Length: 448
Image (cartoon, rainbow, N blue to C red; front, side, top):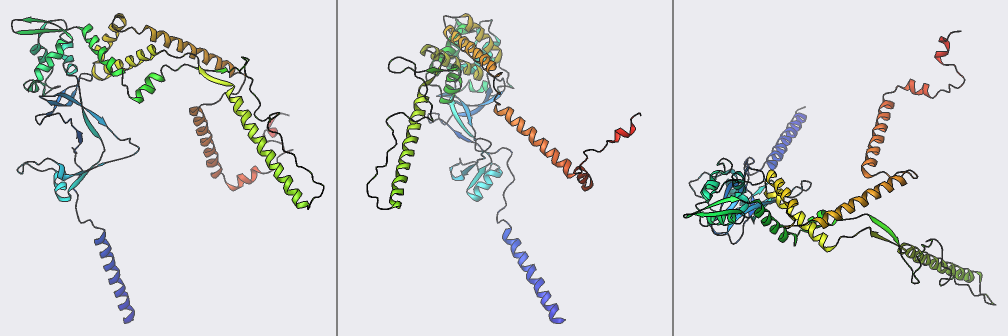
């Protein structure tokens, strides 16, 4: 008994020591700080921006709310364009601490700075990237010009109409370098202006503003990104496709050939030559097999050529094609709409759209509108002819309808399986009984 107790005690001691060693090995040597509520972000700033450039909060001209901008007293104003990774592929940044700016030793250090000092780097949760791109200062003063567009007032009076809670740093950047001169020069491009004594007075002229925006749209339309070109230009101008029968060399329309038929000449089956003295039956069989394989190969090649000729007999062509003028006008309209949707308030954008439809001398989109109306008419005719053809053949389901039908079928099968699983064995056996010739229960309750 003593030996057994000693063995058990030793075993328990060994298990405790192994558990302790496993626990100590799984414990981390470093304790990470909690997740920061304001993590650092990655910014790409322009090289020409000076060291005096600062990130400030100004009024967004489109959404009328405070937004971050980079203001340099020498080179101008920049907006931040956010580039984010798709949510389906999570990514993060590993930032090296040696590349960060040195802070004051007396200032309190954040959790990220403490982690950076301890580990030499820190990780951000998201992989967003912010790029500073130039923005026309005209857009930042448009809300002020719009609020006082009926009176000729000074630039300071216009600037005072911008609320400080929406643009807390606007009054401060007016004292930086050439910022005020830059804003006033851009105001002069879209305003009626008179000089009184030493001061200039401004009033918004919507026709000048429209002309300025159309000039920007024209320059932008010459280099649209490939994604915008494909989605908003090529796809918008795409017309229905027609099947046109090609003509042969003599001018007669080419008739499609049957792909499965072999040609009449040019690919004849090779014949097996007979000899007076045959060496053996096996050699003859080998010759016949080789001839059969050659015949099959020739027939398949001829069939493929016939099928290709039948496919080439018909050519798919769009019903109409846009002219270079129409394509250029569509690019310009896309660029103009992009500027309005990103930098102009919605009420002011509607006013400019209405003015554009009246001022044909600034930009005439009549050719583009006529082409789009013709495309819409062709699409409607194609839709009507397709619906007429659906009466004579089974309608093909699109992806959404097919998915909905499969989902309904799957739910029905699951419901049947659930009902079968809840059915007792006795009910299952009764369902297998042959009831042909038996009376129903309702027959016993009928009147005689």
